[in-house]
View (cartoon, rainbow, N blue to C red):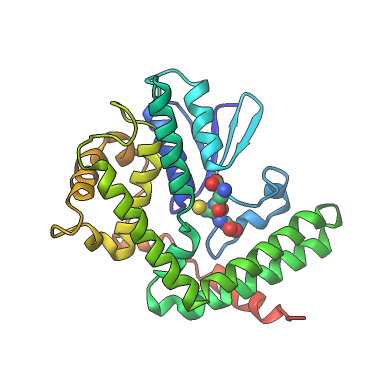
Length: 277
Ligand SMILES: N[C@@H](CCC(=O)N[C@@H](CS)C(=O)NCC(=O)O)C(=O)O
């Protein structure tokens, strides 16, 4: 089986893995799991691939690797090409620090909170539908009950965070705090850790891209955080980021490819099925 990535184009975590694959020049085959309104990650066939019901998942030589930070380390170790981990131990420690900092970015809440306001009602319905679907699947697949129960608990927690304005203002504040830390560090450097592009740059450039496409490039533009602006402009235009297609296609046809009336109808029907108890 060729190196395969279960992913979704609009998924932040999948984008990070695609950048690492592009950096190493890996020939990979993609299997799209539509995690939006289609909720394909809830399918029992996918639950057997990743019991967390999330993308990305990398399949290589029979190994199933999950979680973006584990996958990018795996890619660096198992494929040839320039190393994405610095040689010096001090630089390695620096890289780990920046990987941890990126992990503290609440990407899920940030993304949902910054969807267009017109989508708010749909987001609320989609949470109800996800809970109903998890419940439906646990009833019809008793052997996967634990998996769907865990997903239901996860969705409930995620829903309460996303719909809580205090949590969202905290996330926005913390994200700006992370940018302050980055601004101070990147001032006199080209890369985050050591003299070369590393895993830390991959995750931070993905994060800056997500912040930018969510409408907050003004957090560093117009002289607000000039070091980030120049890091994002220079290192962020690297070929691997472009071929990994981490910026959503905003053309009419690009947007249309995300619009699925059948999935929207199913979401409405499922949402009506959910009963809180
Ligand atoms: N810790 C995992 C999180 C993966 C994750 O949350 N993936 C999102 C897309 S970025 C997903 O599949 N969401 C679907 C869902 O929550 O049902 C990682 O870093 O890879």
